[in-house]
Length: 294
Length: 131
Figure: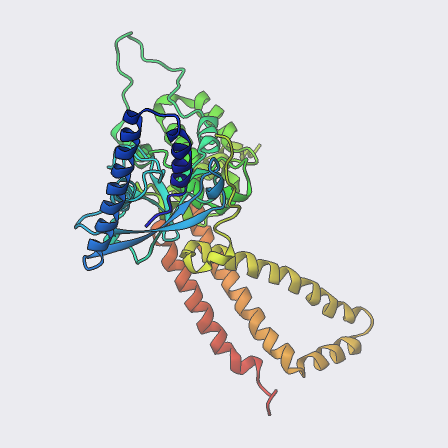
């Protein structure tokens, strides 16, 4: 059972309020208490029933700066009944809905598109909605992304990650527009194939969190931002001068050169983007851009 | 957000059990690199005894080679150098963008090859120490 620290405070305050009340209020409070007890009983029953069933043991990182008793980070245990095809996100949602409604984590689409639920599961950055419980060893240890500040429970502050993403100007810009006003800007099939994988990024931040260079160097753009830069630098429709401008951002001290090819980002990317390969290619572009033989 | 919690470097060396091949390659490459830099200093120190006289150099090298520790360290030095060379080749291919999908296999291959070469070198390096 999860900890329910704030409940105590609730009871105290309600007891203080009871004194000057009418009977109706008394009744209402009584009902409220009964409901709370009922919920408690049900949760306990659910937990007891699980003992024989096929359950998964989750150890979840908890931290809440706003409540005095939860300021010290700790791990909570949850036992979640297993269903075939259950993902780590499903298990977390079950734990939240059944045991502890204060368990906080980001999630939205549940199908690896929105990129909100990247977490540190059993020592690896994974997208929770894309990770099958059955692939993991018990207890399943769920922590917020490393190398980011924890806001609450499994929620980390993504501000720095977004800043780095924005720094590479992650949008299409070009100076050579086609002649006619309604003409399309066509991309060749080959060029599309070249940037295809890099367009798959969902901004989940798993790569940035896995990179131990990015952990030690806050100015380093990081794999996600460099991949984003690759997507546009390699896009032929942007034209030469735009490519030049992009390379100038990338070949700075904390740009591509900080990558030391540990392959951690490539390893954890839930969308299987060959991040290291892209960064290496950008390094070669940067060298070619600066080599002059006259 | 009133407050946030900084857990510091979570993935430090305490998590070495979870390192992937690429990470190990990086760690070993750094380590062997520093060992080789360190060796350069001893190497220069020993060679510079030849500045005083050829005999001084001969006696220095002979007395060093008669020590078992030095012989063992030489085996270690070979291991470090061979790994650094082989992994350096691997990194060269990584830089050229060739075969990045098999970077973990090439790391294991360089480890195995290092092991084989070092084992093969043992008779040569330790010849006569025990005799």
